[in-house]
Image 1 (tube, rainbow, N blue to C red):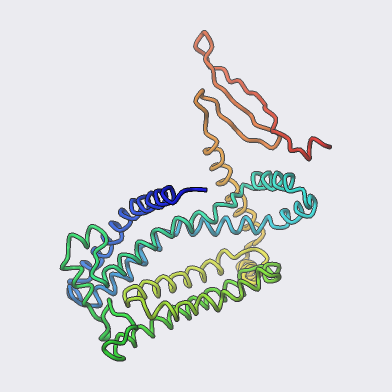
Image 2 (image 1 turned 90 degrees about the vertical axis):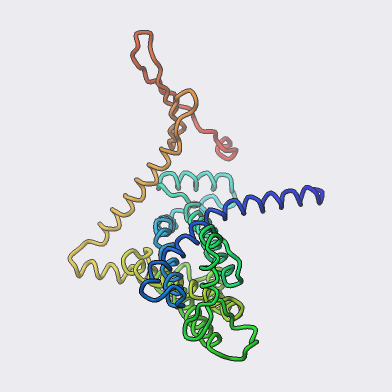
Length: 361
């Protein structure tokens, strides 16, 4: 068992690492915020609440645009996983309780289909520090705490942001506490909370109704997902009253962006075997296009990208040997120089290690 001193040391190290990661993100977020504020200031005034409101909106949109490649990667991986679900189910039924053999067959299936199951989680993990930095910069500004170089070096801008107003509500104001009674801040906060709740609820509802296959809508997991449709929006009702208007502007903007982004995705690139996919097939046929051919090309394109990434990741070892994974084993390819200066390619086929279940047969 680890001693308290060791635990404290690990915690301190994690805090230092988190701080080191967040500093450049604070720098980038504060820089974009100040940049967009300067862009709108000549038109609306440097201390205008609308200059800061539009700066927050455009900052949020810029961050979401930057993250589009990660979103596309996540969606493509989810589609590929959905397409191989029948094969995965067949492997599970065939090998039953033999987890070792089942795991090996799953790994082979991922390799053959060019699918990386962890790729759908990576974009989410990469987005979290960015959104946390954006939230912390705006929340800190509402409290008079400068985070990010461009706000630290410009205290006048920080003060301007903190005291700016829209519709009589301070961007740094909160619904609670009601120190000055019920006024403009509370009205704007209620409107933003409603926008946040409605957009999140509608986004989740559309995803479940249109872009999820029938088999995903049954069972315990499906019931949990249905509960989350109602629970997540309700969280805004309890958390929104304690957050500043500026932060809720960011949340409302990102929710609206997510809603629009999902609508485009569901319409143009829906998940196979879903109601949205059937609608998409009908639209393609109405335009004289073959939806099956389009899907085949998409799968082939995704497979080529995955295989290319796997080949690059394989790389070479220190001796200059290129290692290429194959279904029957591992091919080690070494380039050697002969005495006359010519290059010779030596290939050695190394069999993969068999599982205990395979050795029994």
